[in-house]
Amino acid sequence: MTIAPVLTAPAAELAGKVAESVRLLQGAVREHGRVVYASSLGPEAAVLTDLIFAHAPQIDIFTVDTGRLPEATLELLERIERRYGRRIRVVFPEAQRVQNYVADHGVNGFYRGLAQRHACCHIRKVEPFQRAIFGYHAWVTGVRHEQSAERAATPTLEFDARYRLQKINPLLPWTHGDIWNYIRAEKLPYNPLHDAGYPSIGCAPCSRAIEPGQDSRAGRWWWESPESRECGLQPRQLPGSISDL
Image (cartoon, rainbow, N blue to C red; front, top):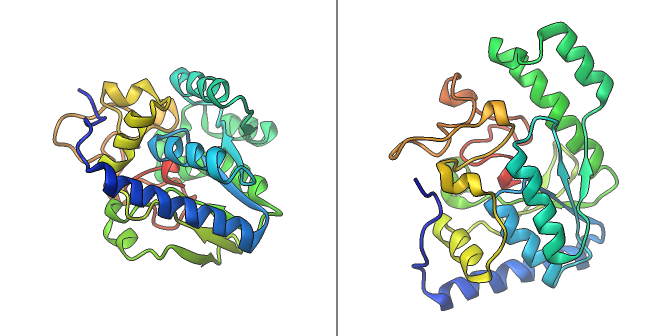
């Protein structure tokens, strides 16, 4: 099953969205100075990385390697760096905290309960993210309006009280089709697991392919109820993943 759709959106409409996203990114640099983008290496990240490197290179980009990412995701990181001739900063969880978690809960202890899984996500994702954004004045996300009812009301610019810095959401009006139209048109590298039925990709043991017609989040933390399927990077994070940061 292929997740990525074929090109369908009018080129002029997509070009307008690209121009507005670039305007927001460049405006963020002028207004806030130190701006950072946390890349999940997902589809939204492919678009934002391309726009940032081409039009707002002052924005720093990092990604979190949780230590449990699929090999295809790590290979994608190398392909991105080759394409742009730039390194993307990789942030890792603290080794001692990971060791303590495994000692207490086991290597795959996150399957045992919601508290154990949230603890794993905090150690492997949230804490490294918090360290990486320290000292910045604003951060860029890949949140889009169509991802959920809550995100439909998200403003383009907002103050993130949780991390105490401005949040810029330059992809809000982009649709799923827009994202993939841009990826195809610009021949951007993306994770081949998307073409194998994975609409959302995080850690390998917590991601799997979905069946046709299933919700896009059905393959993430599938052993839990839909209401709990978030990693804690954003409050009540719903459809999407770290890829829409």
